[in-house]
Image (cartoon, rainbow, N blue to C red):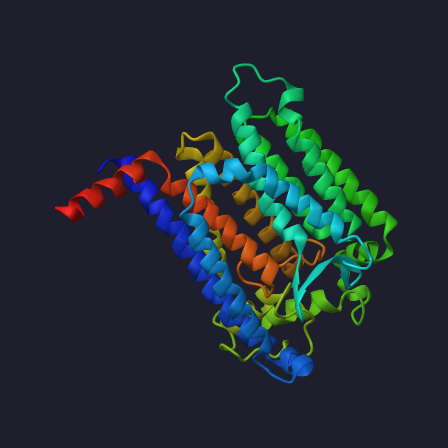
Length: 385
């Protein structure tokens, strides 16, 4: 077997194993971190954990199905997928349909207490459709800036605007880097991405200044001790949790902060509970797994000769990387809190299911690589003999 084939196969399993490992850790930590709030809200201390297990099961099934799809499926249905995603983002803004949670109108009721967050689906749809459009454009001998920008850039801005209109700036902060990652993979000039990144920073500054609660988050990040029982409470309690964990942690299930002290312990701040219960060793292991999955995805983008796979993989790497950095930065006090979940770890059905589907799409891309297809065909022939 040649070196390139070995790397591709190892990369496939590295993505799969690191994904399943992070998912398993997430399920255990959601169970540990949610017992108090679950009992308070539902009367059953395992209700939230059971829901997360259901989300994970559904996500794994969809990931497996997606990983078996041919690349033609993604390119053929890309237009319909992005149109459906934009439609959901518009529908959720309708007061009689969209549901507001914590001041953000970004949810649709599916059944009972189960809700769908269309903006999570929009991330996946943007990657699938953006990769399909840009991969076709890359086949052009001469590609002008206007051809490169249209229509992915403008659709990306539309999606970002719709998400901001819902009041969810945290998700908008992830969508913009996804667009930049797609363009980077398509070979866009660095000056184009730099200019767009600058515009994004300016937009964030404007949105922060015009919303008092966002400005309060910024100020509390700069000096949490200035309002220790108000805006700075969550940051301070998260840091207490990390500090109490030490090197080896207090032990699984032994967190003190989750008992009403740390807000969003099972969602946005679950990394703080990991640090408290599993210590520095546990947090480093989680970071190591994220590093493995991101490097493996980037390896796919670098090794493949397929334009679609290259762009899709880079967009997915950008998604996981920027969302992880924003979440971890907020927990560690390095960035303002934005309320985005930690991929594959935090509680949340929409986030978990669509990230698993997106990874399934990447596995499908890898499975359709010529070297692996040839290997599977060879194995089938050998098994028949």
